[in-house]
Length: 443
Ligand SMILES: Cc1ncc(COP(=O)(O)O)c(C=O)c1O
Image (cartoon, protein in one colour):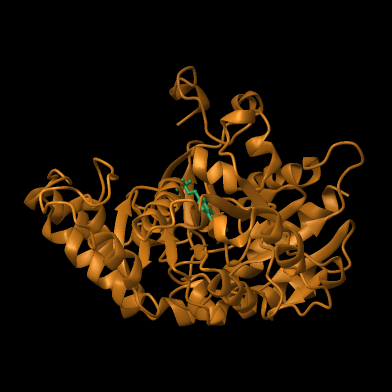
């Protein structure tokens, strides 16, 4: 197929520089395993699990078959005042995988919806227990929680926020970012920092708002979209303790770290910290069909059910037409079975070490490389920006790698590789060597 076999006039691409894209389109027409086929017949290796989604690799028959079967059995059914068998099955499986008493799953369709859902649950829960004044949310600088107004407000990526002004939620504050420049080189282990990144929360942010007004703190266990920035050892445990001390709900946004990226079911397992709510999406269906959700601790659900309202009254006025869509839930059940059957989470842990070793041995010392961070099955190389044009170097490298047959992810002046869990050492070598050559070419 040639470029001009499709018309580019109608599709406005998301989070994409559309003007440049039209000059050099990157269009996939097929995928299998680790590889894409592009519209111009080239093979491109998927170095980013297609935006952290495709843990089991592309075109997995058990998932495809489950979807086809579900379509022929129950294609769709209303999600309100009724449900479907697949939604219960998927919720049971997800709750069983989640740590502690994270047992109640509220489905939605994306990470953005999960963020907004979790913030709404926090407000409704506090109100139900007589603390409706708790309406301050705390996110973190460089955090990403999608593009809804709630998620964007607690998010901390400036470009995503800057044109929305007063439309952002009021009464939101942000924790400082977790990166310690002294920890530029992180090699397959949790960084340790002399700095206390939570001191400001205790000494300034909480006193300013008064802890009794704070509804929830939301963080990604690892800052994924910002460029794979890792929390210092003990950070999340201490955040949990601070939340407990003040009755603040802790929300983990595990849209990236959930379902295997850290080699464990969730980042919560990797770090040994149970949040009050855990947001998921992406890998839950191997990216094949949109599905997201929020897993809530029992105490939240129980509180919401403890109401004097008559039984015909809805306890939580929230939901989406496609919440718990039967086809998406059937895809989730098949995906989670496949991860388990093929031992893909332990494999992610194992291959993460191989990826981290390759990054450090191949990229350290190359021009403009000022840091490398690897942990779980993801690694990031931090580059010195081109003076006056931040983000350009990583973008140019992304374009160049694509031309050489590798899909990598630029984030500011960071380039991230986070392959599917089925990745082999030969794929890692191809990805990292392509990236290394490109870093040299773009010096
Ligand atoms: C941590 C996190 N939360 C939320 C989102 C938003 O998810 P979606 O694009 O499915 O709305 C993302 C997407 O990358 C994410 O990484």
